[in-house]
Image (tube, rainbow over all chains, first blue to last red; front, side, top):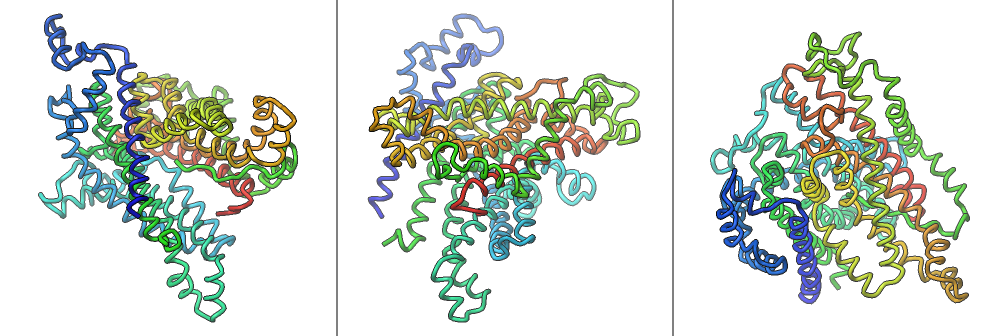
Length: 313
Length: 293
């Protein structure tokens, strides 16, 4: 197991290194002078030059890259030109907000997706299966920002049950935190539920064809017992791993959801960075997103090996 | 982004293609999806004849009017007919989907072919590059690229196309690896046929089925991504109609004019569902091993 983790780490580190080159390269391809952007409005040439020297922008590009990467390794992502705050600190403040949304969304997705997927697999080939699968495809086809707008219209504007936007920290008020994060989590969870449902369905169909399931049925066990005690245990292994991977995708979905609900999370950082031309922030968000995704794939692979008895041995 | 799991058609060139096509068209998901996609394509092509009003002309006396006999979908904050804007918006969505997927295939297919067929250092470099791109969440990459390129529909298409490219590299490479040592490929190689001819005549035709399935699924993803970028102000520039930007504006008038938000959203759902159904149906028919899974 240890050698497996080490081998996977050996693949993950160069991938992250390549992402860093791509992200840094993107900024360098940009037209415009970052020193000029940092200097504010109508700066004197001396100020621009001083900034260029201060941030090492007068150095050759490879030197700049090594310095930038060296800073990131030590947790220094640079300073935001909009907020003038260290980007690393802002990420640390905002990441838990998005992670909370992602975990709540995944909980909703698992609660809806697994039973629906199992049900569709049991009823495979019947109109019920077709209906559940089409509803699943529908879930995948709804733009998250539109669903967010519709939920605001219903629960905030028409019924007045939930706030239309904003955020309250969990430790400030757990009840308010839930009120503010319920709709965004539902929005994020809808597409995720559709994905979990599809994975559960195909995994369960494969498992229900296995010999040991046939044997369990031949022993005269009730279908409910066959499905819940025998098939589900193995059928859910790929679902656990794909759900872990999908947590990374939820970061992507959070960009739009946080924008619609005005939540100061990690996803909204990239949008704010884009509109204030704060490219250091954009770089940092892309890089951290990739790092999280790589970490989650590592966890998913390890979970798969641990959960799958055949691979474990 | 999900990826196609279809395996190449078993027989080389021309083998069972007509029956595969017939089977695909006989699948209910494929047919329903195809009907939806054809419907929206016709709406986009014939938009100038179908739209009751000019989508960009404001009528200051009809600002934010609810749906009525004169304006079936109501009017927006500038008094423009929402139905006409939804009809013309189909053009931006379909064009974005089509061009983005074309870019993704044009870049991804050759790179995947080279990596899979030639292997070695080229494969290693292309595969690591693909891994790096796939590590960045699709929409985050598309937003970053669109921001770097500047907000416009054309740049959004490029950003989405480049973001979708790695999935085609990985898919093509995998497919090439699975068939490059098949007997019929080994035989033509032994006859001294050049690599370029082997790729064009024997490899490419046999990996097209999963690429077509993936292209259909990616169309759905690309249309959603274009709407998302437009919603964030990184796509089609106003006043040209785009479903995503219409939703962005509608968000500001939710209490006064909720209809502004309903129709563009339903249009996005319908077209994305159409491509998803088409992709699912094609995957079921062209993937004999996973049939229906």
